[in-house]
Structure formats: structure tokens, C-alpha cells
Image (cartoon, rainbow, N blue to C red):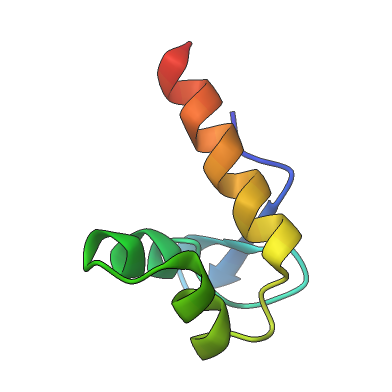
Length: 67
């Protein structure tokens, strides 16, 4: 299931999951967290991503992994 924090953005022949209301790919959040950045550091770098959406995406990801 795709989180309600995500919309699918079409770029040429690719579909990229992005945060709703932005063109910021959700992969950027996971890349930053994997590299050791905090959520606050990520949100500083991508101010157009609302904190509520980032948290919702993470919560939905955990829920889907637990299912």
C-alpha cells in the first residue's frame, strides 16, 4: 500500500513516488536516514516537505513492514 503522504509523479517514462504537494522523491528521505542524517536535518534541506508528511510516510512504512 502506498502512503497517503505519497503521490506518483510521472517524469518522462518513469513514475516516481513523491511527497504529496511536492516533486521531492520519497527516496531522498530514506537515503538521508540511511546515511545517518536525522529527520530534522532532512527537513532543513528539503523545507517544502512538511514534517507531518515525512512522519506519516515513516509510520506507514513501519506498519507495512510489520504486516
